[in-house]
Length: 104
Image 1 (cartoon, one colour):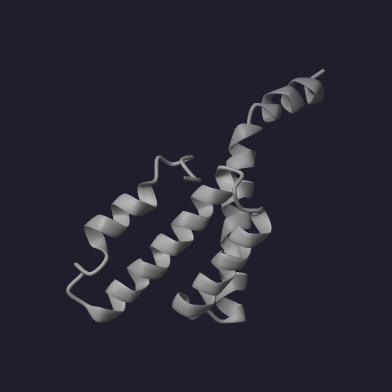
Image 2 (cartoon, helix red, strand yellow):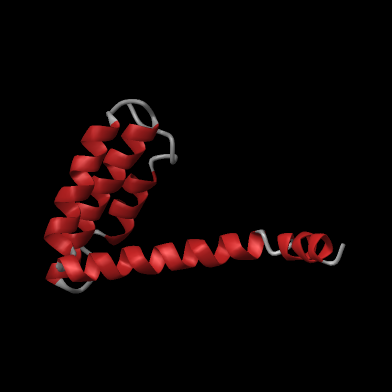
C-alpha cells in the first residue's frame, strides 16, 4: 500500500463523512475532497508527482469553486497585503536603527 504521509487520513474522513452529510451536493463534494486528499498524501509520500496533485487541485477547484478572475485577483491582493503587513512588523526594529543614525 502506498501513501502514509498523513496516516491515511483521507480514508478516515471518507469513512466518517462520505454519505453522511444529509445533503447530496455535500456528499458529492466530500467524495471529491477525499480523492484530492488521497492525491495530496500520495504526492507527499512520493507515490505521485506534484504535477499529478496540482492537476487534481485544478480539477477540484474548477468544479467546486465558482470564482471569477476578479475574485482571484482580490484574493491575491489580500494575500500580498497580509504578507506585507507581517514583514513590516518583522522589520519594525529597523526604525530604531534609522533613528539612531539620523540623530548622530
